[in-house]
Length: 211
Ligand SMILES: N[C@@H](CCC(=O)N[C@@H](CS)C(=O)NCC(=O)O)C(=O)O
Image (cartoon, rainbow, N blue to C red; front, side, top):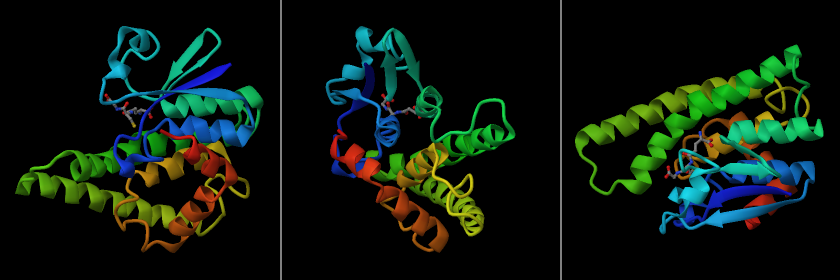
């Protein structure tokens, strides 16, 4: 049985943003059976020796599939797609290289900048002028990326082409981190892309079961 380890949404704004939504959404799309282990963030359950044996950095998500353990949301979602040979281009192909490009863009370029905005908005009470500047610079950088993405999504319905893929799960999820801002609203292709992805029955089901 596949188990996805996540954290409870300890603030309502975090529902569907804590990154365990990504493998859960993927599993729902793939129709694979799974169970969730939702740990209590406030009790530090994700820092216990038992969980650190699965994820040495004490973050979520992590996955176990029998005796096999994996962490990093993009790695888990990619593993699941490969396991079913669904919603992902075959390894070793040019299409897979393009998949990797978009997944790495989402995970390593977009996601950390979005997380910086969310972290400052939700988790830091006292914000001095330097911090506000740092936050606004991050939002500006994000806006530039989303503007370019808007042009890309004007050319095709999904990020890899005509069909929905796991790259869309990861890209939409990174953009969802800044759902509390208006940053996507002024980009019609990006906003329509997010609306249709978040209306997918698999996402709705994952959200119901999240946190
Ligand atoms: N790049 C990692 C990020 C993991 C991450 O930072 N997860 C957050 C929750 S969304 C976490 O575990 N925070 C708790 C902590 O760092 O103690 C991934 O996508 O899996």
